[in-house]
Length: 136
Image (cartoon, rainbow, N blue to C red):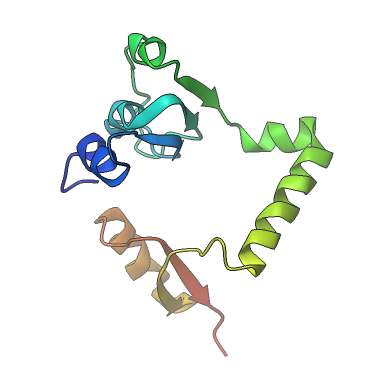
């Protein structure tokens, strides 16, 4: 996403249709491009602002293609609808067991290398997750 035009690349990959859902835990400068990458009645899930910037988005972008911006506050969602949360988690575990979803794991490191891993995250050199292994 940092090396190419997010919207343009997404449209290429979806034959011009755009995506139906964007999960955005980052916020910042990419949120508008992510919204523009959604198709007709696409949804932008606003999950957080890890970039440290709360973006301002032109609301006409939602109007033009009947897009929806949906705030997702996980902690409150779990408290407000614990049964729904349990169903969602069960569905995720089923999909994982069936191989329908696969976490992107960049590296597995011993816990002692956590400072190095944190620097790699800050330098944006990690794609996916870093798993820390317990030391034996």
